[in-house]
Amino acid sequence: MSTPAYMLVEMNITDPERYKEYMARAPLAVKAHGGEYLVRGGRHETLEGDWKPHRVAMLRFPSYEQAKAFYDAEQYVQARSYRAGATEYFNMVLVEGVSAPV
Picture 1 (cartoon, helix red, strand yellow):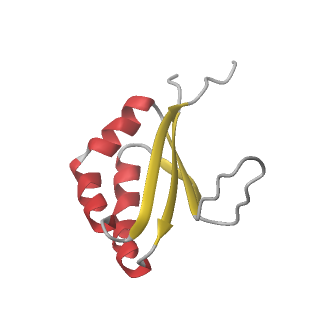
Picture 2: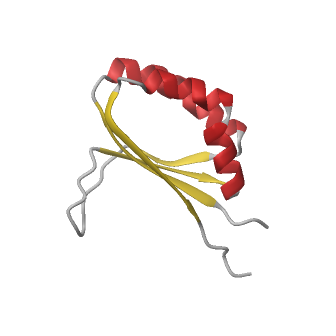
Picture 3: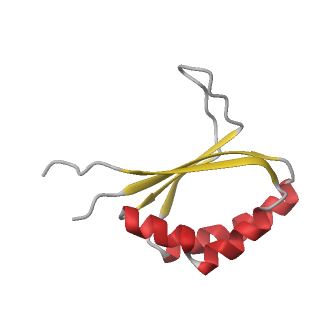
C-alpha cells in the first residue's frame, strides 16, 4: 500500500466566469490520475496565525508520484491555461501523507 499525497491550494478568484473554464477541465485531469477533491471552497476560518485565504481546496492522490504526474500531465497543463488571468493568486503545495497503522 502506497502513502497518499495531498495538494493544498489557496486562491483568490477574481474572474469567476473565466475560472469556470478551468473548473470544467481540472477535475477530469485529477480523476485521470487517481485523485479526488476532499475540499473545494466552502466555509472556513483561521483558527491560529494570520493566514487568511479567500478560498481553499485540498486534493488526495494515491501517491506522491501520481500527484506529480497529474500536475505535469498535458491535460492539466491545458487546464491551467484557462486559469491564467482568473485569479489574483493560486498557491499550491504537494505534501506526502502518512501511512495509517495496520
